Image (cartoon, rainbow, N blue to C red):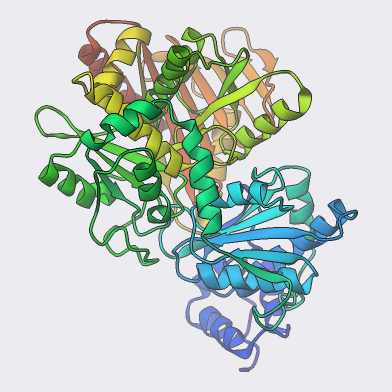
Amino acid sequence: MKTLPDLKNFDKATQKNIKDWLNSSIDEKTKEEIITLIQKNPESGTNAFYKKLAFGTGGMRGLMGPGSNRMNRYTIRMATKALAIHLKEVFSEKQELKVLIGYDSRHSSRYFAEEAAKTLAAEGIHALILEHLSPTPFVSFGVRYLHCQAGVMITASHNPKEYNGFKVYWEDGGQVLPPNDLAIMELLNEMDDPSEAKAVEDLNNPLITFVGKELDEEYLMKVSTLQGMKAENHLFGNQLHIIYSSLHGTGSTLTPPLLHRWGFEKVSLVPNQCRPDGSFPTVKSPNPEDKEALALGVELLKQEKADLFLATDPDADRVGLVILNKKDEEILFSGNAIACLLLEHILSQMKKEKTMPLKGVVIKSIVTTELFRKIASAYDVLCIDVLPGFKYVAEKIREFEEDKSGLEFIFGAEESYGYLRGTFSRDKDAVLASALLSEAALKFKLQGLTLEDGLMQIYREYGVFLEVPYTLEFEEGKEGSSKITSILKKLEEAPPEELGGRSVVSVADYEKRVRVISKDNRKEDLTLPKTSMMEIILEGGSKIFIRPSGTEPKLKTYLMIQRPVSQDVPSSLKEAKEEAETLKKTLAAFFEV
């Protein structure tokens, strides 16, 4: 190894992390890479070592590369060891502990999965590793079906190709929650030496078992019981033409098979994009929210004059939807619009089939459209808000099962294109959502209508609700994090009195769990758990939510505009869009960006 470089230009925390790694017994190649990095690019060196990779929303996610703040074999091993130690403490009475491990199509995902399996084996825990790449919700399903104590999914979802992640599930199939995530985080933070987490030499070990396609069949069979129009699907499903893309990810393993099983035989795959490839060569970012990522699918949609185009992100937990209108122009549906179409479809079919539970419940994140609640109310179904993150939906399902209240989960949604029907999985499931959207599209097609017509019907019945995302992106690392913190501090200490020409009615700080009413400065306690998020309610009912991303250097703003019931939906939508644009400009001025 080269001589230890001069570290005087790095802060103390960065120096300590660099020394911990270089003085450890990690492999020499990694040490050489670290020295080269900090000598040739000190800024990148700082970002790789200024902190330890955080174990946050259900696990950890970051750029791949050497360093304490990067995804690599050593941070994977340390996180796995922390999980193993905690599992042995929590389930001390069990003779055998089992953890299911899945992985997506990203570079190093399979390698990281194998490192996790070898680390679990070294800790005396039975690792069940999936033979083939799989969607994230499939791992949640598998944890439950195989009676595991935990699950690990190696994925960075829709993040750019340079990222990867380590997502942890608990025995109920939901993402790990307090106090378990906090205990794992604490154990991980105590590890300074990256070489202290040991792994067995190879995968040929009695504590490592591979799980094959037999689990696929169990999943397909279980979720097929959730069809709302089984007879119609099988009689008329071949009339619906679907274009599908997995955006180079895992969705192609299960989505086309499920569509076929439900009766949708006419499925055209987007060439090239349905082959797994961690470089994501045909897209800048494999995100079904991005119009650019959907371009090839839209092109095929127009060529084949198909009914709808569905695109799932690389780990198939989120789905985007595009159709053509009567002028052959593409219509991209927002995550909120998809949530409302699915909810109306599911509840209307349950009412028709007389299968509505006595105490049915739907769940949405607090930043998801209020139109969702209006639809639920029309069917006498309770709608519950949770914080952003599908782990909170899973938490509520578990509560319903344990408290004997009789509440029965029907459907959950997030504005970020995540949906869950039923309880076989406990995470958002784009495979199942794709089948349900196809079913809804078939229902409208049999009436001579499209999904856009269905959305307009919803607006005419409940009023126009328009949600516009406004995301501020910052540079990776310390400087970007500092800018986000200063904006949130300004909102807390000196909130605006008006925005976009509308008075501010109240400002809520979810970190402090308090809402301040502007008129008389009265304070109200918030019931949701503590989180880094601000909410501004404006005169007329429109809302703004502002929160930092849990995985990227971004500040996410949600503009939620409401308009009353009107038969002139186009005019209401135009007014709502104009208000959203005005709010964007005034927020940018307030944020000084």
